[in-house]
Amino acid sequence: MTRRPYLTLMALAAITLVSACSSQQDELKAWMEQQRHEVQPSVPPLNPPQKFNPRAYVGADGIEPFSTQKLTVALKQEARQPNSAVAAELNRRKEPLEAYPLDSMSMVGSVNRKGAPYALLKVDNLLYQVKAGDYLGQNYGKILKITETEIELREIVQDAAGEWIERPTTLQLQETAR
Image (cartoon, rainbow, N blue to C red; front, side):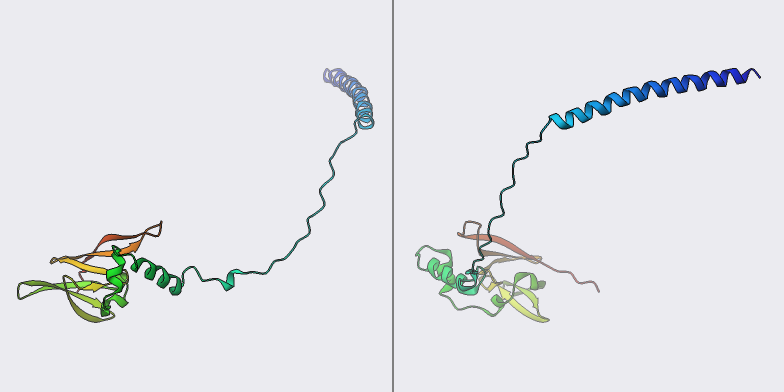
């Protein structure tokens, strides 16, 4: 029975606390109502949407940026310059292996004929013999040196500024698994 007075005391404390909070809550509600009436929001009006004016696409009438026509014009302009690296390449007859990209070719061996090194290239399941001075690849690749394990060549390519530069390239011997 000693517990009962304790519970009663606790209940009285809780009621007193709730009644005190309710008076503070009434004050808070009154203050919020007063602020709601005093403060006027200032929201700037939205701009009306702009009218859409459709335009016809005119890019279809121009030259495609990656077209062979544009490349041909650029090559011809470059060839007119006397000291151009491309000028000599455009004036010579193309060799058969220049129709294939370098990444489609693989060096499968090398031989020496009459003291001159030759490389054996496999392209489209056909075998070709090439020597120093021959051309291959689509970037005016000229073979400079042939060793037992690689072909050294130089290509003529355009850099980011559109200038023609020489770039050294190698084709490594591809060993096949047996």
